[in-house]
Length: 252
Ligand SMILES: [Zn+2]
Image (cartoon, rainbow, N blue to C red; front, side):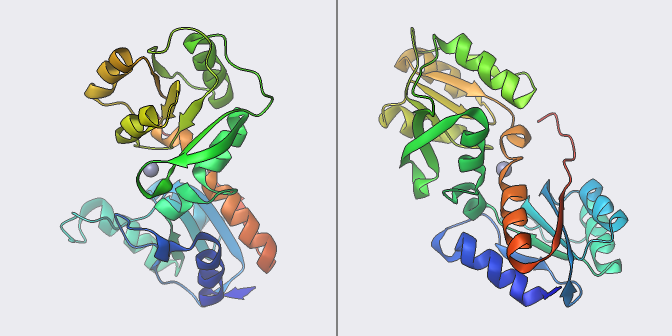
């Protein structure tokens, strides 16, 4: 059992949100009860995740995608009303960490995705140093773009979109989870032979072909499934709390 505020301090101490310029508030987004014993983690503070937290009698929810983002109109209607109503009715604390959760060097989304794919980061690149650059942890390379895509497909259990730009074996791989397709150009500048992220937009296919660097879109949700449970489990262990990760399936 811990106090809501002590849990916030533990997350803040680990993730250092003050170091980031972000698209929404990091930390405690919705205040619930004082005493926290059970934490549910997930990727997004969707209604399905909040309902799962209610069913598990959680005192706190820890997510990557919280409720409040820059550019929202601020009205509490529709889906926002429903999510907030559930949290408030059940007195559940909502903690959300966006870029700080992507960035953490061991427990964050990028670090944990790299680990899941058997990649070791040797450098960082891009805005706010969010991009990871490295190679296979076992020192081997991939025979070609298709071999890399097949590896990722198997590891994530989902289809990936691969635009093979680089011809031949691939060793230097860059990655940045979620909707980080705009990091592709800095990955190219950093010397990557392939770049993995969650989503693709129209320009990236052309950059891949014209710059000779392979682009892989592996799913926004699928690439961001690993940071939240790693951080929540770590902090729960530290404070003696119960923790469970709930993966709400998302085709995106
Ligand atoms: Zn995301």
